[in-house]
Image (cartoon, rainbow, N blue to C red):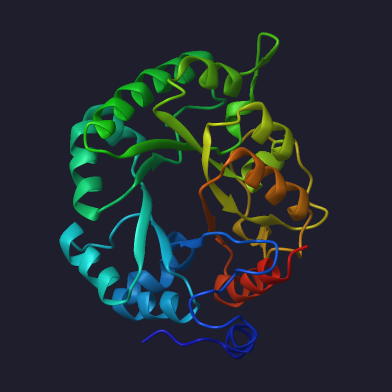
Amino acid sequence: MVLLTAGAAAALSMSSHAGEAGIGPKFKGPIGLQLYSLRADFSNNVPATLDLVKKLGFKYVELAGTYGLSAEEFKKLLKDRGLIAVSAHFPYDRYKSDPEGVARDAKELGLKYAGCAWITHEGDFDEKECRDAIDVFNRAAFALAKEGIKFFYHTHGYEFQPYQQGTLFDLLMKETDPKTVKLEMDVFWIVFPGQDPVKLLHQHKGRWDLMHVKDMKKGLQTGALTGHTDVSNDVALGKGQMNWPAIIQAAKEVGVKYYFIEDQSPTSKQQIPQSLRYLEQLR
């Protein structure tokens, strides 16, 4: 059984009426939850954790595995709770070795999007690893498109290694097919390496279909290109250093289609309701 702490229960009580959690006068979503945010709870009890996701007011979810259940079993648990799986992350090595298998799994789960959140690499991300990923992503996107599913890459910060007059991220954007390889902006992993999310949203308009709304602890130094930091640096939306009004406005302007809260902190159950409340009041 998954229990809300007193803090989480209090925050949840402030949320808007059922079915519209996170939606307010300015932010219309649609807002979902990346289920990895509750990974510890899922490892103990999948049905009870999905009950919690529903109680928090979410309708849309993004998957990061099915916790030992088959795609059919997990999909049924979601359907029983009125939850819709929009997207999911699959490992890079699976896209590399078996993109058709990923496409079959994604179709069985009923997904609109299937993506990759980490490119396997050693040390600093380099040009060869980037070009390998470009090939993997283009092939994966083709395999998924045949099943009516869109491929996306989730930014993670290490892609901004310098390259020629720009970065390896620029190379990735230039050499992947803009019609089939879409992007999920994780705002944390744009700001942490020292990039500007508003600028990148406009620079690659038409590529950003999805967004992880994730805030960063105030005072945390940026500029590292590792793609790693302590999960305690994830804070509730509005408590950190992100300029959410400007970011959300830019996201609307460039056509982001789905937003997902991803909170990997040890206190995610308390912070998720706070993040929803912030979005409801966003100006």
